[in-house]
Length: 226
Length: 248
Ligand SMILES: Nc1ncnc2c1ncn2[C@@H]1O[C@H](COP(=O)(O)OP(=O)(O)OP(=O)(O)O)[C@@H](O)[C@H]1O
Ligand SMILES: [Mg+2]
Image (cartoon, rainbow over all chains, first blue to last red; front, side, top):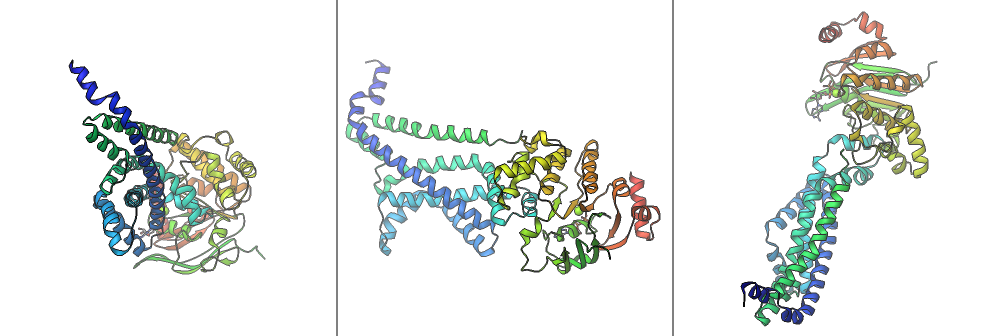
């Protein structure tokens, strides 16, 4: 058997693939499901936190900063473990799906808040002054003038964070979440052949490359500075 | 009896902590008047202007707009601000909106006008500053002078009773100063009431009905431009103007 043959047999074994693909597909569904749910919740919560912080109430900003720093300092794995294993001790049990989703959403929210807040701070004060001088309320100024610009500034780092946290869905395996990587690992051990891992890698490419392409298109579209 | 003033400042005070920036300003601006404010850096010109639409909170005295004291906490400040246009040194156009989007934002958001009506009004305002053909451009595609004219249109479109200008030409290349001053003169000729902080002494001399000289948070001297520039009564005014013409 030639080297190439051995390589293909090890990593692209059709027989193993045929047996593994239902598990891989199911795992893919879980990974995408958790990933999308985390992205939506994380973006939403992070946005809400950034807006709250912009109200410039000292104690509120303080709380938000503490939350953001804690969530960025803790390894996401630890947060998942806390929700799954520690919360039942105080009477709150959740599924592997829920604890992974909740933990990663909070982590993503912390990063999103930080990115958007940075974007807000980067805008000249004159932007809100001009808007307020024409009679826009604080909220109208926020939604029509500040946030669209802050979002554009933050977009590249937001994309990075969404992708990074999305890949962390695989950490859910620690609480037996049947995500694509977890399923691929099981299938790999069962078959004694890493082809399922190759399939998982392909699945990640299929998921994330469109996300990156979409983000790049969005960035280009928002390039209003001539 | 003269018409009541559109803007009246009554012993207006402003301090930042221990720093008194405005030490009791009394000023009336009447309908159709163009009043220029000159004075050295740090004399409180911007602070005074920004108290007139409460971008800055005064710490004493009154700001009367059309007879209403807008420093009172129960005043609907967003409604008041639509009657007071403001033009900034740095233009402060919204970079993510087109020129027309900049001009129509408050019409749509605050006055709830539909986009067709807002666009019609916006284009008319752009026409007044000679930039209707740039309606679809973005601010970054315009020269400084054009951007400032858009900023003027953004204020004018709300049909304010009073326009505040804070050094509208100070950030401009010399060759585009003229086009902005020309638009301001046209506004004035159309009857707009204007309070203009400026270092353009030529403009103040030619276009102002009245010139105010401020120093150290107080109005030192005021009068028709010919008087203030031609025969200043106060030593400080003379010193300021001498330095200015010396520089120019
Ligand atoms: N936010 C602030 N906090 C503290 N001091 C301030 C603040 N804004 C302005 N000042 C001070 O108030 C004084 C008056 O400032 P102001 O901007 O009104 O002057 P100005 O006449 O407009 O000057 P310029 O010609 O440089 O624009 C200055 O001494 C300035 O340092
Ligand atoms: Mg100033």
